[in-house]
Image (cartoon, rainbow, N blue to C red; front, side, top):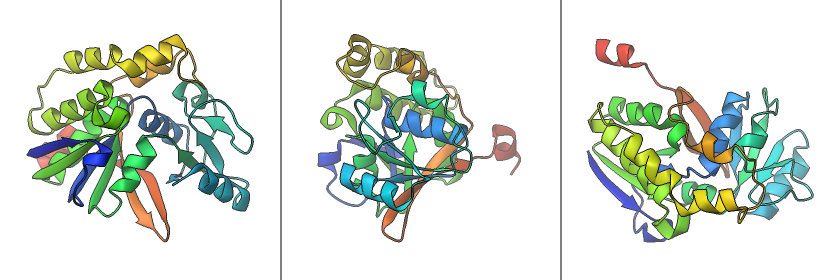
Length: 233
């Protein structure tokens, strides 16, 4: 598999297959939202769009980065989201990096959103689709966020080498600037368990696929065949 690792601003063409990585915390939060029963996630272009969607659909759940704000139901924190019942709900998500990265590659034929909690399922989907060329969008810190790069590199390796050990990649994420800022309270809207939750490997068995629908980019969970099913086909 030919893998490229690019920041959002480095995207110079529409990739065929894009894996958009945001470990701390957008796509860890998204995975938790699906685990809590959410049906779909709308990736909003802006805070204003998120609020407008919420105004049109009062039953939708809107979340954002940073501290709580009027009009939003919660913040971009897996620790906070895991206590919410989202059964059958639509979530509107706007973050500073993850959602921006997904929208930047919305014209790709396949867009996956990923983090460590769904790393194996994402790698397995790349294998089952026989993806020969994959662009990994490293969303944080203009493409330099080591937690996102480590996760992207791990998924790329797992897609071709099933025996790849995650330990060194998780260690890089744990020692990243994002982890430090979450621990030190530099970033707002944080639960004490957020870092640990973002570093849980393969917590969930699904991948997440984003597709344009009408004027919106919609993220949904995608059930990936287990290893046994995969090898028997």
